[in-house]
Every structure is written in structure tokens, then in C-alpha cells.
Image (cartoon, rainbow, N blue to C red):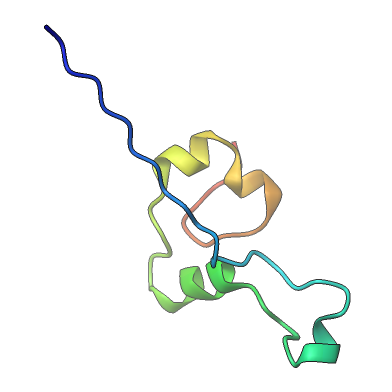
Amino acid sequence: MSSKRAILIILDGLGVGELPDAADYGDQGSNTLGNLSRYFEDGLRLPNLQKLGLGNILPVRGVEPN
């Protein structure tokens, strides 16, 4: 009998840019993922998200476009 597993990652609170009305709420420059990637010297290592094209959507230090 084989065992099957699934891992589900929910990134609900991980922002990737500001909305057009960000200034109305004091959220100008909001980009949690981008800001987090700049915090670390080598950026982030997210190989699976890189393969899925995350680097094609927005600049994330350490995640190259494919």
C-alpha cells in the first residue's frame, strides 16, 4: 500500500505589490515578497515557485525569470 501526501502552502498574507488605492490606506510601496527578498543578501531561494514563473511576474531577488 502506498502513501500519498500533499503539501499546501497558503500565502494569503504575502503581498506582491500595492493596489491602486494603496495611498488611501497608507500602504504605498507595499510588496512584502519583494521587500523580504531584498532583506537577505542573496535574496530568496524558491526553486519551485521559480519553475512556476514567479520571477516572470515581478522582480524577486534570488528568483530568476524562466
